[in-house]
Amino acid sequence: MKNLLQCGTILLCIVGLNVSTAAKEITVVAMNSFQPFVFSDANNEATGIAVSVVTTLLEQADIKAGPITLYPLRRMMTLVSKEPNTLGFALFRNPKREHLYKWIVPVTLPENLVY
Image: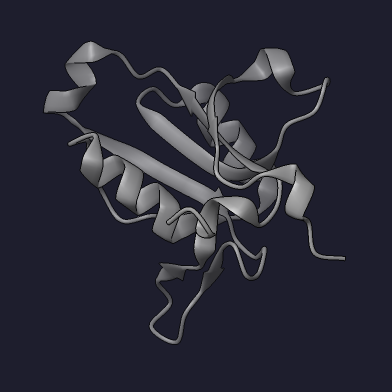
């Protein structure tokens, strides 16, 4: 798990979650193609390093979530900003986006980017 967290600068953002969400199912969305972090496998299911990290974090936090749905970047960002109980990931954190989301944890760390 530690090695998974040391591969890039993808961050989790979360919008509209509160304490009562633990009893509900949340929606999880991600950018549709950012290999090896997030991509669709042969069965059209989300897979990749970031998917593994997020799935593990949700399980450990006992948060109920539906399957991860992949969207183009702009659509994912719109869903995360406007839909309650929606968690999005595979999004770079930058000054323009800082105020748009509640950033919770980096999925990967910047000092180990692969060029």
